[in-house]
Image 1 (cartoon, rainbow, N blue to C red):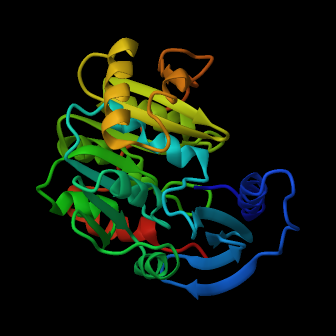
Image 2 (image 1 turned 180 degrees about the vertical axis):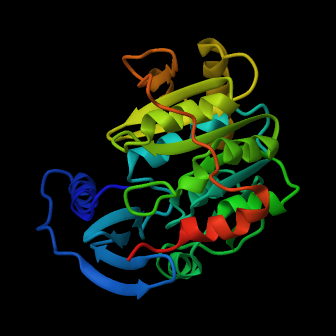
Amino acid sequence: MRSVLFSTLAIASLAIGAASAQNAPPVEPPRLLESRESLYNNIYVYQRSQYVILTFGHNKQIYAESVFNSGDDRELLLTYTQLMTAGLMYAKNVQSILEIGTGGGRTAWYLHRFLPDIRVTSVELDPAVVELSRKYFGLKDEPNFRVEAQDGRLFLSQSKDKYDVIMIDAYRGPFVPFHLLTKEFYQLVRDHLAEGGVVVQNVASDTMLFDAAMKTIGAVFPQLEFYKSDDNYVTVAYDGPARKAEDLAAVAGERDKVYGLRYPLAAMLPMRKPVDLNDTQAISPKATVLTDDFAPVETLKSIERHNRKIP
C-alpha cells in the first residue's frame, strides 16, 4: 500500500472513533515501536491505541504498508485490502492461494482465518519485514499458512505449484518493483494458475505507469476488470470468457455463506468495472506494454538490481 503515514494514522483514528461510538477518546500521538534499516527498506513500526502500523521510508516520505488491529486480527482497515479478496468469487476452485508482497500480512492472514482448510502462502522479499510482521502483526506458521522470505518472481520461477488465486501487492514506497510489472512476469504468473484461476493486483492509480500496467496485464490475460478504492485499483485478470454478473453473484453468495467472510464478496460486486484497453478516455493510447530489459540468462542479476534499495 502506497499511502503516506498521515493518511493511515487518520484511518486508525477514525476506526478508534467508530469503535467508541459518539464519545471518542482523545487521539494519542503515534508511538515508534521499532525502526530497522534492512537491505531493501527503511522500516518503521508505529502504534496508536490498539492499531499497529508498518511503514517504509522512501525519498523523505513515509508510506504505510499495513495497519493491524491488535485486538481483532480479522479486521481489514484499508478498503483495498478488503477488495483484494474479490478473487474468491472468480476462481473455479479455492484450494490454494498465493500472495506476493506480505507487508504486515493482513490480507493473507484474514483469508487464513476464514478459510483455515485452504493452503495460503505469502512471499515477502525482505526478511526483516517477515521478522517484524511475526513480532508485531500476529503472523505465525500454522497448518495451511506459511510466509516465505524471497523475491516473488524468483519464488514463482522456482516453484512447480499452481494456485487458484494469486494476489500481488508488492510496493516499495510509491511504486511497484518494475520486474513485477512486465509481460514476462505476468506470463509466469499465468503459468502458475490452476485451471479457472485468477490473479488480483493492487495498482495505484496515480502512478505514471498505471496505463502501461493495464496494457501489460491485458496483453497476457484476455479478461481484465477492476474495483476502485480511493487512489488504488484492485485489478482482476483471468483467462477464458468474461464472467457474467449473475454468475459472479451466485458464486459470491455461496462462498460468503460457506466461509462466513466479514467483508462479503457480494457487497463488492457493485464496484466491478471492466477495463477497455481500447478506450482512449480511460487508457492512454501512448501507453506501451512493459517488457523485461534483460535476456533470460541475466534474470537473477536484473532482479537483484530492481530490488536494490534506492539511497
